[in-house]
Length: 105
Image (cartoon, rainbow, N blue to C red; front, side, top):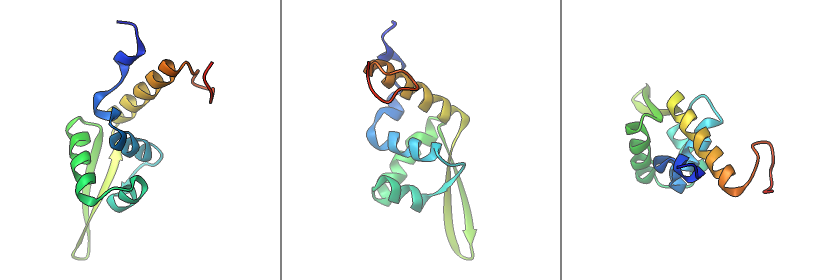
């Protein structure tokens, strides 16, 4: 099995989860609200997708309190970064793009 599609990650491949992991890859940690706004989805939809990513070991969830208000922090794990990189490389290869190029060959 040498076709690059075999390297696609089925957890990350869904558009919302790909958007979440890409947003988290750009930062060390982000609060739930920031990711919700960046990805443009509802709280419940983000919670569901985060649960799937957390179960896969790709996202770490950390809860804190500011006074009586809870705050949820999200970060991409090392496994999540590796999976995202592998997935993006497979997409580039399928499209015929080199890692440094911005257009297909």
